[in-house]
Length: 161
Image 1 (tube, rainbow, N blue to C red):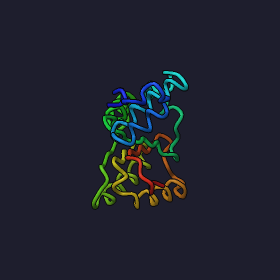
Image 2: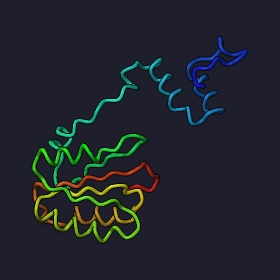
Image 3: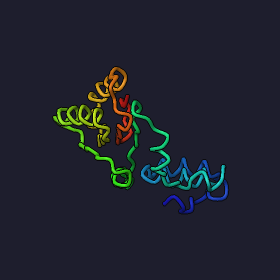
Image 4: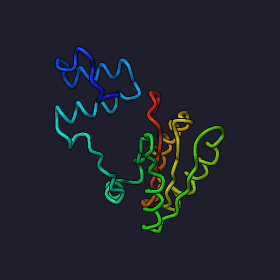
């Protein structure tokens, strides 16, 4: 639908106007139309997906700053994180957040931060209130092992801290 001809207006629509028409009639196709507009206006390289290099991401990280991965349809970094942990021979403790999972997450954070393991908090958009506690822990805790890393995955959410 985003490439269909617009009767009576096809020759007069700019890429931006076409994107607006698509948004009006098929909001679910707006992202595709937006990519077409951006590619035309700025160049194809601005719409091409660049795979995340987890080794580089890890090498730039440190124990007091979580690595946050925003989820999108079809993109889940969990396997990449687990593969990197295996490669580095580091134990990873993972929990999918939601109803009552904060208790497990607290236990994992306490253990991993002392022993130099990684914690993977998945789907934290389902347990946003716990993230404030995580932030406080990272700021105030003084004895965090230098190999400790906190990986967080979340869908975009307006209340994400």
